[in-house]
Length: 284
Image (cartoon, rainbow, N blue to C red):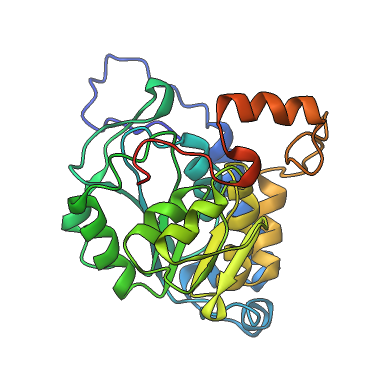
């Protein structure tokens, strides 16, 4: 992300006029996307080329769309940082970050995420996304749950990444719905009436409910969401810009691929993980 510009800065202060990497990519991408989708598209003027390119998406090219990412103390940064990067490249899409109290939020490992809005101050969201965390005590509290349920009830799309699906499930909105979750916690979904599906991306009710598996699955999840909303070309465009071309050095990202001794190490750290029943603070 680019640093904010202080328009009140003294003229005597040196000003760095070199554009950031994201500025360069953004400017280039706007030109490229305009050419790809038929020029003027990003200004809301739907051309025949744009209409054709976006025909597989559920949104019209000029339709604005609001995404609310609901964060909380001890949440996992990568759960929403990956999806956020994808969403920020989508045209006519506004991303808002909110928490129960607003302001800075201390995430997992002591990482402080900057200013957030108060959930109660957001009237509605077109899409709400709940990331996961290493401690779900805060998002399982009644006040947070009430705000999530309120926004989810009015949203066109209700989504989660990692064990954020447990937070959603605890509100009751996923009762009877299929959902993904991190492999170590996936069967905990049953306690809240949700249907656990051990896949990297899961949707239900024609895509109204969409979820990603554990942590890094958030990028796969976001690209699928992007394709659903704005069409495959736009999603592929975002994927190319962020160079999402994974080539892991080890095949150890899931118990089905990891060596038994590695799975045993995780089981020692998270008892019950091999059965998808690991417990973390906040889960009843």
